Amino acid sequence: FVLDEENGLIKSSESNGTKVSVIYRPTDIRVYQEIGNKVVGNETLDSLRRNYSNYYYFVLSLSQDNKEALHNGRSVSNYTELLEIMSFEMDRVVTLTTASKDTIPVGDFMINRTFGFSSSTDLLFAFSKKNEKNSPDWIQFNLNEFGLGTGNQRFRFLTKELEEAPKLKF
Image (cartoon, rainbow, N blue to C red):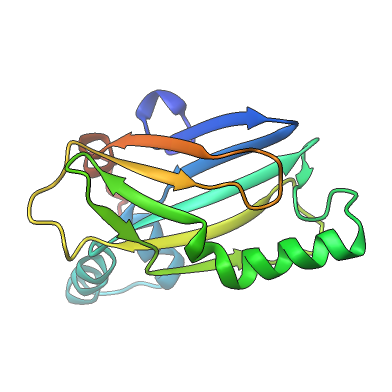
């Protein structure tokens, strides 16, 4: 469901040979990642859902020739520079904006280190919903150029589609 573009939870573009995808991670996927296949009570499940529902989670996926963009034939200096940015500085490269022209800064982010054994370089981003007074009509994931030659990228998501993501049965 999440990876079907018709459902509005994934947006993609391609620029200069780099495929850029932004994938919304619904609350229940985050809950499942925490509990796995363990059996938990409704109280624990509700508590986890409340905790994770305070944030928008997105995965930024970057690939070149179906390989990790970070590891794809880079010189040592270019690799080191990109790794530094992806590990510690993406909060200056990525923001979320809303239909009401509010900017939501990155709350936290993390690169998934797979050391060149994946088809994409993936980063998880969390953005707080706490400052929202009303749910905006849309939110936009903004990725500014940071060394891959993709230019600035904008990915707009309708909040109604994000909110209507199906719940998992635990």
